[in-house]
Image 1: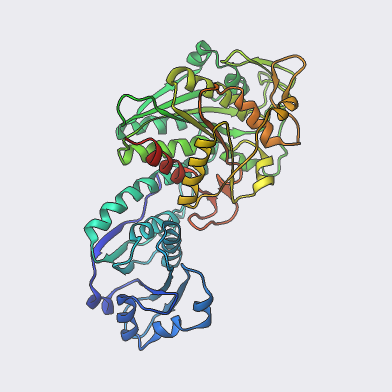
Image 2: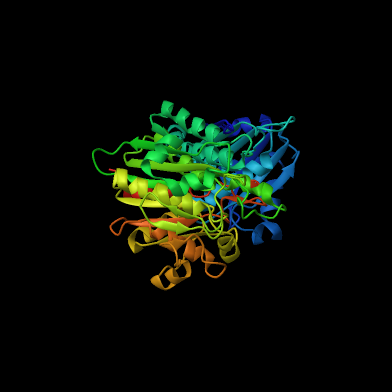
Length: 488
């Protein structure tokens, strides 16, 4: 797994700043007030810090803006970073500050003079997250992010708080590594093996092979993978930290590569379909985070792992498939495969675990990307309570999400003349009809959300907390939801 930066929390030592190597970061508020560290650097540099803070550019900048002073006189540092801190130390802003520092730091050693600031643990989390760099398949891996020393007045207390954030960071890195991995590396076997290795963290991990899935009647999931030499699997991860109560369930779509099958995708851009297992990646990252921080909750994560390929044995448009539930599905388009996988895994999750609630994640529809772009995931739900709690968690963690409509009026678009339903309703309301399809495999008494993360799982340009590529979107919000709602 990609390494997280070495971040330490040390006692404040202003006298040592004159001889510090690498990069030094200090803070100033929107009203030009300098922190103690900034004042010391200002004295050392002949008021270079205060001049930077007094500039029009600094005054107009948002919280988290970084002014770089290269080779400032009076210090041995390569650079001094003057950071504009916000009026409120909210976690989202503090993480953005940390991310800005990571970008400016590069491979140099970084000393952050935080003093008694609030939200230092979130600055550390931002530093960790933005330092991610996926180099598994490069010969020249470049220089890793430099070590970080955060000087603060109460290092032991801050370090204890930051430990929880680092568990989240490790879950996000795990998700990003999975989502960035190429399809010839992250096969269904390899994916399952990576999840099985998390047993060392205390997770119970069970791998259901094709013979097991046949016995269970998961014919919808198996249909998707039958054109591939890669064996289809379902991996069940259980974290039992909350006593005897029923678990909360997370379900992820894990299509390790999606050609579209017989309804083959255009060649241009097909290489991006290595990320079509993004939903399973998020579920895996959340389960890793829960285990690392020893969450006091019962959570089960289930991922359906398949590869969608065209060959003589592949499922075809016009086929009628019987799901584990017993409902029949007319296949209109073999590229609407994710919902076929999820249908069986959702039913299995309820049938086996009777969860108190259930959320599934999937890079499900291009229509979601058209509707919401890369800023928000689509949230579909049969429960205002669960959807509201999840949206609150997203807001608290700074992860974009937007509630989308559902309703029986859309069902006619997926009604089939020869089966119980079609697997796609065409272009109009494409994300909604996909959600309506999944909703048919959710029991009436199960609170449920479907998260379409087609636009947020992997992006073409950097975000505030991640470089180009996989983002790990959803790990923070789901961890927050579980902590706030289901932990004892």
